[in-house]
Image (cartoon, rainbow, N blue to C red; front, side, top):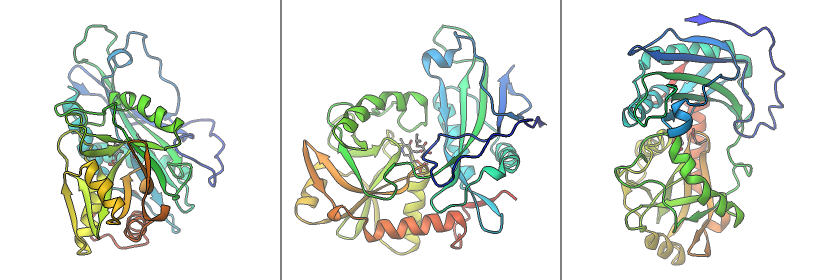
Length: 351
Ligand code: PLP
Ligand code: COI
C-alpha cells in the first residue's frame, strides 16, 4: 500500500467537546476500482476529492457507507469493535446497490494501518471514541441510469463524543405516521446513502416539534415499529426485552446483535418479534412498559424517555434511564473499551 504522510498536522480539537462527526484526522485511505478490480489502496493526507460534475453518485446516489469505532485504553492499546461484521454488512449493501465487494481481511488490515498513523487522534475521555467511516461511491462520469464501472472506496476517521447533544439524557422520539423509511423489497436493509436523504424531512419536522428523531413504522400497514434514523429499537415489556424482527426493511445493526447476545449470555429474556404501536401504547398506559432504548454505533445505547404517539407524549420510566438500559450501556462500553472481558470475540486489536 502506498503511504503519503501529511507535512502539516492539524491542531487537535478539545476532546471534552467533540460532539459527533465534526473533526477529521490527518489522513484517509482511498482505493479505486477500475477495469473490474480494486487498485492498490493508498493512505494520504485528508483532503477534498475532485469529482466531475457528472459523477454518477452525485446524481443517482449509488453510494454506501459504514460506521464503526476504535478505542484506546490507558496503556495505549487500541482496539476496534466488530470490524469484520461492518465490512460483511458493507459487502451486503454493495451487492444490493450493484457495487463491487471488498476483501474483508485486507480492508481490516489496511484500516489498522490508517488508525495507527492517526492514533494520536483517538480520544480517551469517557464516552468518546474514534469513529470510522468507510464509504463507497460510484465515480463514472455519466448520466445514464445504470451501475457504474468505476468506484472509489475511502475511509475517514473522526474523534467523537456522544451522538445526541443531550448525551445519556433520555431522548424524545416521535412515531412517524406519514412518511416511511423503507418498504419491503426496498433498500432498508442496506446502509446506502439514499435511505438517509429520504429520512431528512420527517426528522426535520420531528425536530421542530421538540423530538430528537422519528421512529419509523412498516411501510405497508404503518402498524409495526421498525427503527429510528440511526438506531435499532428495544422495548422492555414486563422485564422481557423485545426488538423488531429483521423483516427486510430494517438495518441489521451490529449493536442490536450485540445487545441480543449479551442479554442471552446473561440469561435475560429477549425476543425478536413484530411490535405494534398499539402494543406500545397499551403497555405504557397500563404500566407494563419498563424501558425503551435505541442501539447504534454512534449512539451506543440511548434511553428513550418520551414516545410521541399520534400527538400524545407518552413518558417511559419517568423519563429516566432504566436498569436494563444502564446495564447494557455499561456492559457494551465496558467490552468495547476493555474494562470488561470479551467472551464473544468481538474486540479486534489494532496494535
Ligand atoms: N439503523 C440505522 C438506520 C442506522 O443508520 C444505524 C447505524 O449504523 C443503526 C440502525 C445501528 O446499526 P449499528 O449498530 O450497526 O451501528
Ligand atoms: C452509526 O451509528 O454508525 C451510523 O451510521 C449512524 C448515523 C451517524 C448515520
